[in-house]
Length: 104
Image 1 (cartoon, rainbow, N blue to C red):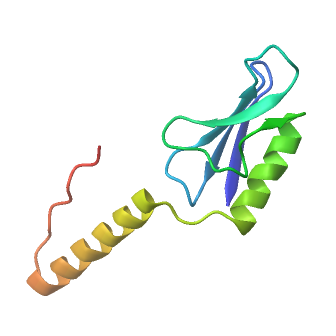
Image 2: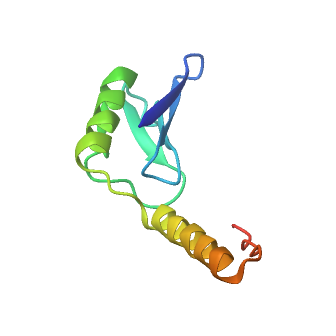
């Protein structure tokens, strides 16, 4: 599922995907032209999302299509899920609460 938080004043849109840990941001391209681009704060952007888009709705469509067809659950989210499941199993085996490790 994709959640969009649009800021029309700054011409940006923050997109949160269930399959990615870091949100994607649609922003005005910094090359002086009228185009928009999709950026991420951490890691490498998928090839399907790299490039220029003529408008924010066009970039949103690209993100929705990527989420539907191409996106896989990221390694970071998968690792967190496995850690939670392992801690739950330990709690059942020991009949005592297990302390969760601190996240970065």
